[in-house]
Length: 125
Image: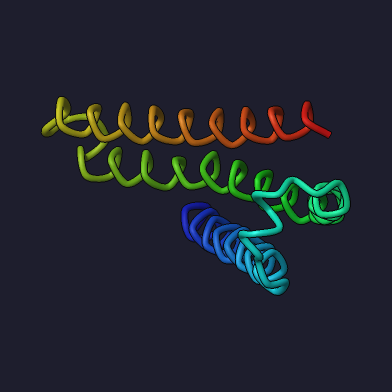
């Protein structure tokens, strides 16, 4: 039963994170991009770009944190599945330990990359 709850929770987190990210992309591309004014480095355009980026900060943080939490929650059902497939650690133990190691490694890598990306963005504001 706890596995079903974790699966549902990770699916909800995944959909929420991607919905926020899609909203962020739509908000960014709502304004038309003019390459000529961008390459001229006009102060008004630079100020508008930074103001837009500042306005999108909350959506960016929400998307990053939801994605980070999704990866942490998602690796738990995968590891539980590997434990069930190994029949409580009695069969194909090496393969299922490999699944657990890859799940933990992938989740940790994604988690750290999202948090580092958020940290880099916070440093630029």
